[in-house]
Length: 143
Image (cartoon, rainbow, N blue to C red; front, side, top):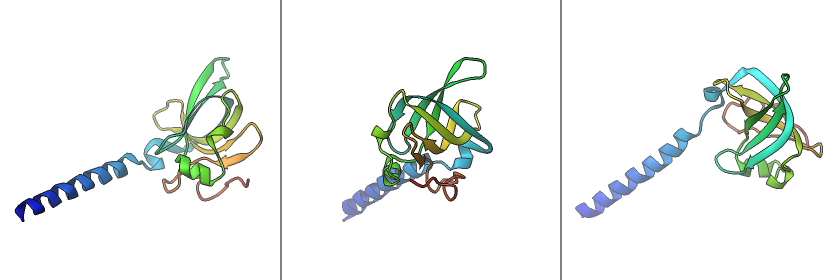
């Protein structure tokens, strides 16, 4: 009987550690991004990562100085994007995209994406739900 309780305790501890680490890994918008720094970028898509917990796209943007800068854009989870009608195949490498979002507090070329306009003209809400992303409740494009 003592062994049974010990194994149950180990199991419960393992479940707690596993679930709490996942919850801690998911961040709020305000922890990394600055609501006072909205930004729009337009450029060529260079890479897409369709992975959990957040998708990412990378966009080459021509700066005012003539240099190309590669921006990383954080999206919501792929499953959420699929529910909104966006698929990985909708993002052609080399295609021109326009992204609205908010700059990272770190000052790096990283954005929390709110909306993305694809080469075919479609717009999608690209942000994460429930994180405080300013675009999650309003101003969503109609497809």
